[in-house]
Image (cartoon, rainbow over all chains, first blue to last red; front, top):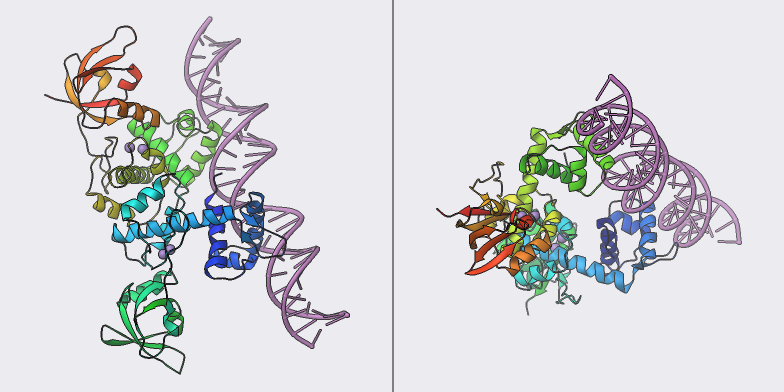
Length: 220
Length: 220
DNA sequence: AAATATTTTTAGGGTTGTCTAAAAAAATAG
DNA sequence: CTATTTTTTTAGACAACCCTAAAAATATTT
Ligand SMILES: [Mn+2]
Ligand SMILES: [Mn+2]
Ligand SMILES: [Mn+2]
Ligand SMILES: [Mn+2]
């Protein structure tokens, strides 16, 4: 069964809300994520339910069937492999690749993902530190702490970012904050919960909101 | 102005018919190429005319404006660069890449083609020997003769194939007939114009139809 | 030049995916 | 437990793209 890009995007959205953000995939949440209207979501959910890709009861949050989950996982795999290709081979900045991967992830061919994976050397994490599921659908795991939840004196390296927003990532570039960059957490500023941290021996400040979207691997 | 994949496919089709096959792009010719119906073509041509991408008068063959030509050329560049990537980097067989490139050619990003071109080392010809237009829209030129038009004793190497059909290319694989393969033309068989030729010291036969779709660079 | 065949366009309709506005259901507050 | 607010669904419409069948225009024969 072949799915339209729109159908695929809905499956991805439901996966992101339920499995990644651990929220309920209700009509509005999906509409917000996909920048569409609740009525459009209802329509599409019904179609996906007929195709046995989601479980749906009127007025209840929707969930993926096994089949739907497999497809969503494969799309995430595709998205993240393409992002890796764009950064590692085409020398794109990590801030620019998300919207291109949104298009590339829908390219259909039986062998493409495996060949791309092989070519890239079976990467485990994408340029934003997000885990790339294996062909079998397993996500590599890792111990991470949100930068916003460190304690004074904690040291570590940036392991992932939780947003793909271009302006957010560009701002991190300015501070040399990229994946694997060592940092030291200094303290939280009482005034508005901003974070003070040391990067390459320089002190910088990050808003609470930005700090919430940066994950750290703590050094022992 | 951003164009749908369908609109882009029509521009490519008109380019192929007028500039490559040197025929008139009338409604039926386009419908056959795009495997659609004449009435659908008329509808789309009208839309493209409003957008000033084609010149259209009722009942007359259609032609591309400069703007339409630039877009078509860029799509061909995209298609052929992606085919090159698939064969040279992902190790696809040349017989499998066309349908994937049909999808990839529509990916939109300002920098993508230039980065891909740079990464591939500015290739001049794609895996089928077709010229890859430069960023400026110039097609590399070459002296070619159709295999069907050689004379007994002529030697040369295969420089391109005129069809992307998977079964055609797979059949060529079986005979070791790939780009740059040296061949010697033996003779035409009176019975049905089949071609006898020597490949790696072995004699083989090709149907007239296949020979018409293989281009040769003659050796002096 | 008229008759016939072919090509192109128009008319009307179907599907997919979107939207707004209104109705219905569920959740929340008093 | 009712009243109000919020969320979800339904109804109806629209744009893009494609289709079939019929009409109109053009090309080819006789
Ligand atoms: Mn992304
Ligand atoms: Mn990513
Ligand atoms: Mn091709
Ligand atoms: Mn090609």
